[in-house]
Length: 307
Image (cartoon, rainbow, N blue to C red; front, side, top):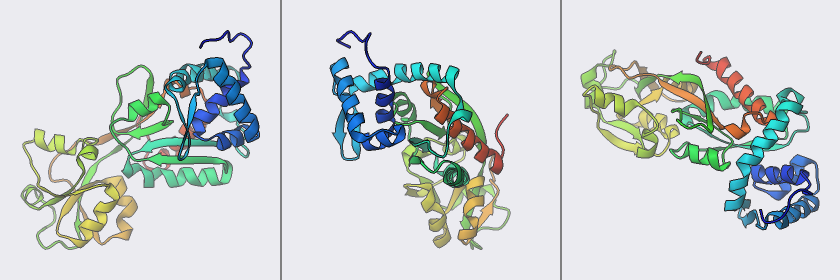
């Protein structure tokens, strides 16, 4: 910063965080209970103080500049420290609390836990919105940049500024079309290896241990079709002779909608651990704490968390 900030109104920093979090000045104003002109005026004062535009226009609202990304984490640390001493998640007035949470969640978990979370939001926190992004391998970068608030992801991370908590495990099963002509139950290894498979595109396959475990066990499978998302697999399996692997919990959620059979794995593949991850700057954020607690309750109501 190029100017003396001793007389800076600290409320400007709260407004800055709200704009960063919402990615939109109008939504930031709503979340703060302020008018849009008042928020725009405050942003102008802060821009002058730091000698940087902080946000630039984008098709969806505003995007942070490099300077804003540099400021957001120490600012959230400071606000979190204040929040830890002045309030907790229990102090939030959920009926009026306005916020947009951006999360990453692996496909199998979304239908398992998010309907329960949304039901709670609808009844208790009607002004909280959630934007879910498809899982990818750059999740830690998004958490550090502040563009994602929370992730449910298959791997922990070895970095001091990301908090991770194991929340559940997913074990794989094999699925085929109903009464597949080449499968005699129970499914054996030879048939599993011989039949063509449906797999996930390479980036998403990197999020699982299935192929790694098969290769360690000297097993192989021919992936005849590479799906772009896990949601496509049940319909593809139902209408073809291809087989696939799905997490058991995901299969349990969708099995009533497809004419498919489930088979226990004929080879040993370890369970996939799923973790909840967030940046340390959100550790004491009352709204963030509330979201984490609700998502954990949703997990517990379905399968139960890890100890």
